[in-house]
Amino acid sequence: MIVVGTAIYSNTLKVGFIWDDFTVIVSNEAIRKWWDLQTIWNAFNSRFILGFTLALNYAVGKFDVTGYHVFNITAHILSASMLYFMVRFIFETPAMKKSALTNHADLISLFSALLFLVHPVQTTAVNYIWQRAAVLATFFYLASVVFYLKARITSRRRYFIPAFAATIIGMFTKEFTATIPIVLVVCEFLFFGPVWRETLKRVLILLPFLLSLAVIPVTFMRSNAITMDLMRPDAVRAEKSVTTAVSAKRLDITRWVSNETMTRKAYYLTQLNVIRTYLRLLFFPVNQNLDHDYPISHNFKDPSILLSFFLLSIIFLIAVGISGRHPSISFGIFWFFIGLSVESLVVQKDVIFEHRLYLLTAGFAVFFTSGICLILNHRRNIIIVLCLVTGIFSISAYRRNMIWEDPITLWKDVIKKSPHKAPGYNFAALAYGEKRDFENAIACYKKAIEIKPDFDAATINLGTAYAGSGKHQDAIQCYLKAVEINPDAESTISAYNNLGIEYCAIGKSDEAEKSFKKAVETAARIDPKQAEPAINLGMLYYALKRREEAKALFEKALVIDPDNKKARRELANIY
Image (cartoon, rainbow, N blue to C red; front, side, top):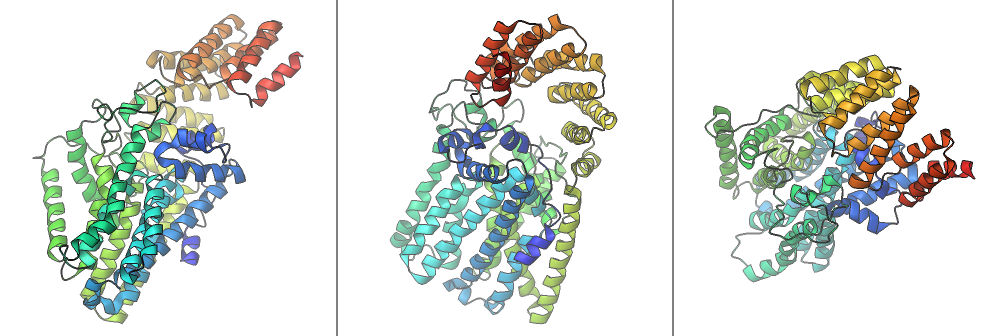
């Protein structure tokens, strides 16, 4: 597995930061000191373990992406290895000892792990650094089940300790780990006989795990105003005061965005079709896309919704029906539905992401390999078919990884498959800008704004591209428009700041002063931790020989950010 996993992902070690990586790594001061656990906790809250691993990566290699990818790939290989042990232990349970599939336990264990490792849908979670959340949480998820099964099979209670520890650690990595206790209940039902046997003993065993269901809701209720928005429900995000608790009545942890952004009905109906798409991607991983442009459904009577509902209902009923004869196959199906439940029930702006399939692929792998063994039965034929599938998936994953090698290639792929979504054009433009290809960058930003006229970030970025190509007047117009679009957004600070820089470039110091002052005022109101506007205004005053005013601003910047080298250097120049 080490050899195969490393070979497939060998061409992704230099994949750059994308999307939320810029928020959680590049511009996130909370990960600069790995030992400052309180700061990491405040920033990441329910994903503290994830934040801590990012802080460790930063301590080792700063912004060198290689270390981040080595971590992700290693965690992916370890997750696949843990799946191998989980399947091996499943076949040692009382229910599976009577199954005909037990004769193929070694093949099912090995190829379940390999399919999980090489499946092309895993490439998004492994290559997208921020989505190590899914990879790492799945490792703890599988570890919890592995140690639980070990404890039950051997009757050695000490194995419950690492099982419970993995559960709790997982719950501070990604939210879908809230379903671990449910999976353990399913394990009891499928693999250790009828639920009524030894009822009290089973309840006592499962009780600590069931009580852990409260961990994630309680953690969210402790979320505060300085926790990053990515880790806060919409109800908490709207809370501006820095409080340590939000009442359960006000906090809706089943909704991550406002009702205006996505209604609950539309989200749940759309998820019926999304789950059908997920199944298609598991069996036929073609036309993969980092950012799907998925149609939103509003009517249950829509033919596609009815089809999805009946298909999923039939699959679930089949799993129930065969649970007595083929528990491993049923377990793979139940794993899929249970693992998907959290992200399908919590209303989010984005209805589909391929990284959400990472955990589910484990269930698919168990189901698929068990099914192949049941259908073919002959050992040589089983090996031939599973080797063929594994080989095809490996080649597909490697080819998919080639698209990730270059950010322009990645975002061009997104644009090709989702031509009516603005973010793809915005990120493609950023990639062009990194290579100082301002002509293509400007064209992509314009397309993003054409699709979404109120896209303030793309408008600011367009101004930056104009500035880079020497078109200062066009840049000024873009920054002014961005301020009009959303004067209360955090991006407005950048808009005013950049506006001041452009006015300086064309010699309009009075306008530059006004813009920098606006940036300072807006930062004080929206994001008091930003020191850059004060430094820029101080530099303007220093250039205008207003040394005392410049000195005061540099000192203010150091109060905001004591480690700011630029402010310290400018202050030293004055002295």
